Length: 370
Image (cartoon, rainbow, N blue to C red; front, side, top):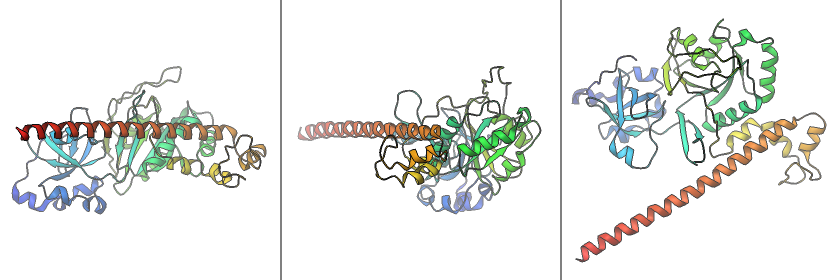
């Protein structure tokens, strides 16, 4: 992927299009994406996958070489989403940088709300098959992991919890059990980038050109895992502070191909893992709570002081963890708040758009009248 030369298609080469580039399959291209590409092919565009996002430009791979690419003027100005790492894009080759004219429909996307007060979606990674939720043995936080898992389930990717730095844990098996209780039914891998424990099991999840993404806070050991998986020092790492607070060296999202097949996306440590709209992830993560809630006497039971509350009864019997219920409530409130603010923002933008159209029509009518 070090080669960044722009390859120009001749008309004869383009006639073969992406079907002539078997290397695309090693990047995750399959029939699902091929079926959605003909509209772009009709415009003499070629498929490529986004490997890295540097802000103003991207690094993409077209199945033969990696090259610089920038969004076309239309793509930048149409108000739609811009490419994210993992996206398949429609490319026009040119020198010095190729132009991205469109984004192929995403099979999955990993999103969060933009940090701070703005209610907008930020796509962290696209077309991800497996979301690895990374937690250091030095800092296992069940509530934080539940938040990441909610994001993972909403993305459409299959979540896997990865416990790192097991070589410095007094009892990694106890930590594994703690994680399994926080995420019922989600696989937990115990790993160490130092000793190599569990790394092969992680790589096994990415066979057959599958794509994974590593998610977690700074200092969780994501970059060290990638270095171990590739056998190369691709990602800079730095020792964790004595306080246990990590200082992540990754400054941008990047997709890396692994020696035995598969790809993995490293992300900067997320200081704010804010949820985006949709409650589907909650139902998958807190299935145990929702199953018990279905037994409540009242369908709108808030699980506080209502008679016949199955949730309160289960907590009293020790069958449900009250802290887990509070986490469920908190995440549910957050998702509903984001959804309400997002709907309001969309309505405002629609009013602004139609107001501008009305002004333009009035000006055009006036000019024609002259």
